[in-house]
Length: 371
Image (cartoon, rainbow, N blue to C red):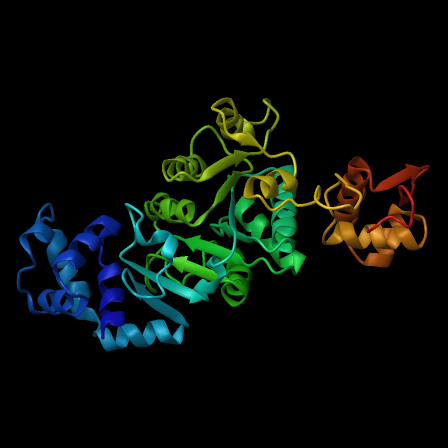
């Protein structure tokens, strides 16, 4: 019954990752739950710093649900309980100084077996920031890179929507701050379900745990530890993104940032990261280069420095390759919103894929060139 016991222990009020690790250092999960349910004493190191009121709350919660029922609740939600020391526990976390004692997993941890890039940022993102995050998610996934984020509003959600749009081999990885039965924010319930089916959703918290504010800064260390490169798209001068960036730097993870206007508050944190010496991201190629995945300069094939179009941009370019088109023709022919089509043609024109003349767009260069 260890899975159920772990779920009960991880869901104790104000337990926290450090306290849970301490508890499991001195008690097997089943033993700890049995001691709490019976009112017997835990190891003195576990009790240290825990006042009587909190300990009484632990006893009440531990007694409210049998471990078998807790395990069944996890199974009903397709949540796999993975303890530190289990063979399926992510290798990248095993030796982390703040490794979670247990993970509650929806989906497959195999999503962590390939290359991994974190794409994070403020919840209060600008339209430009969300578009950038989505584009990064698209291109990275198309190149087979797993995109790690937090499923929060703003930048995080945009990054994973980009992965979904791509349809590439790169998988989505989400690290969340609450139980799997409470997708947060609620408007991301569909995105949460998709990430769990296409990749993996990871939490330190079992089903039933609310998205309390204090849990999110804690989860950021896990998100940082899972990345090889962490990209901050937009961040205010303080907040969770900078906490994650600091946690990544402490772990030797490469941190990168997208430059922004000094007039925009959502760029204050990222610009400060750049001042502090992190590498800038001006396109997904910068991130791929940091990963060492850019092989375009190898061999005898002509080198094309333009980022390869993905998603809507690829569809727009393909449509314009068949015949020169106006924005209205693209909107009608591709059945996409005007704003999305306008953004795509603007990016393609800026990157050198499209030429514009009198409101008509057509591909630049020879049609014999590789697409």
